[in-house]
View 1: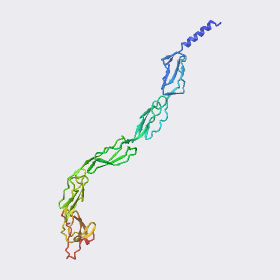
View 2 (view 1 turned 90 degrees about the vertical axis):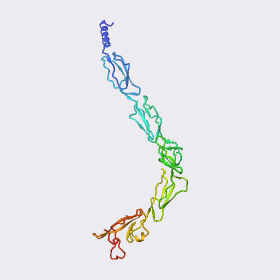
View 3 (view 1 turned 60 degrees about the vertical axis):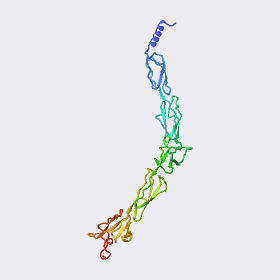
View 4 (view 1 turned 180 degrees about the vertical axis):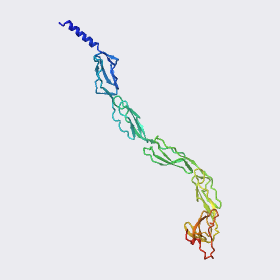
Length: 345
């Protein structure tokens, strides 16, 4: 038989145990949750920590019982994000990311000349898997370019079926009598379209005018068109100032308007001059005069230094200015030394 005193003492101890200090709300752990979650717990009550979806536990205790002291034990549990596998290498593109941890997102982009087939991003899910598969960077192509009116394709080499790849080129040329406005070459862009197409327009030129003291020849047609040509010439004793040939340009004008310039009669009958780098006798080389544009160099004397130098003279439309320093000697003044025979300065 248990003594009454022992029974009373046992009851007192139970009362003390039941009346111990309560435990407070447990500490928050990053990415973890507590069940049950209350503001206070009686001694003996149990709580369980678990990691939120997308996180896994690393070390520490998950289950705790409120002690009589009212102080929860130190919790070393850590919830870390799940890590998704390596996303892979995107050929002809780039994968941008910070980490592969949940819930981070990676993005995909393609190099210039390629376009994305698939999702442009993927997220690491709570199961540790990517939400989307790795996309593909497919090459950008352009359909055959439209041909402008009055034009034709002169160069086009498709590399993908009948399409052209990025940076592929096509070259146009206009039909006869038409001029091109714009670039004759178009390029397949990164957006799958062509750069601006040229325009071909019919161009007419007026009949070229005949130069004074000369003539002009051109095709015997009722109308002269783009790239038609005219040739010019001059009568005797006249020289052509400008090209012998002119062409009907894209703006309806001739590329040149040559004229005929008169020859020059020389007042000097006897002299040695320099023409095109050679010493020649003026009386032999230019006995019929000088053509417009021709240039010669006369010899002059420097009396102080007893040496010679040259000055130029040019025939310009029938007029030539003989240098003042030049002195012409008579053929009878055989004792006088010509400037051309004096040593150069």
